Image (spheres, each protein chain N blue to C red):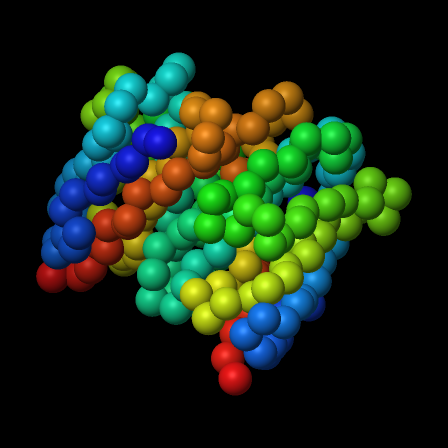
Length: 110
Length: 121
């Protein structure tokens, strides 16, 4: 089973700053099958990035994903007030379990 | 517009059963794998189960295998999750989600708003 570990657990930044979120896998994620989701309180998760670096439809270009193998990064270039939320990474390349999620990173306003 | 609407959640006693539904619209339902993902109160996301577009292949997390059954009705464009032998640790918001591609099991590009299941005596 691939275990995803996200860091930091909580990130405190101000609007306009750059955010860098990390997701590390316990073993290589095949074909960079890694996604990032944003979740705000009381809402469903929203897909931001898939295949490690492809932005989902309608996602602003301040969001970018990078990485391969076991180390992946979500970068938000200039934080907007609406970006403060919890972010999850997810892998979908393994056979069992079919999907695993990281434990999440909470991005809060400093 | 692609839309997923869950229903069927509620309060159930330990050992009880519940069936969740997810009504889909705005896309060719039978072409896409569908999944259930849950979130316990104050916790992260946990994948529960996935079914292929035809319904011929199903997958489960170890935590629910043998107790939960995923199914779909492609004529009614509805996804189901039959939950038996429920435990307190099954308490969560249950989301249905659509696979982002027609082939295989990849990222989840559309999510419903969720339905809440509470297992308590």
